[in-house]
Image 1: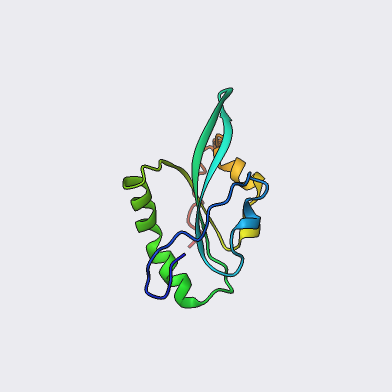
Image 2: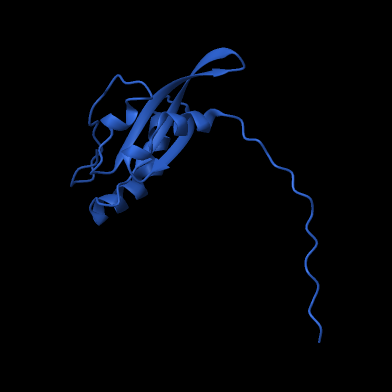
Length: 126
């Protein structure tokens, strides 16, 4: 949480799984959240840290601006000083958008679709 003096403080620590994640993130105020996501990579169990930035549209404009401008500072500080290795970053406008499917999708390999070269349309008749 960032207070009126623009000091960042820990709002709380919760032990939740991916299904309960959206319930512990504020729906009314912007928040930075760190979530340790357990998943599989090539058949092996893995635990990755996910940085989640939520910024509800109903929150105060000043809060939204402060949280948006501090996002990189918070990420850099937690990486350098706390030793967190952030695997993925998620941004959402409300906590309800943070679903197990959304978090899981971040860790699935992307399937690239090859598209052939589309020749541009020639100039019209003059």
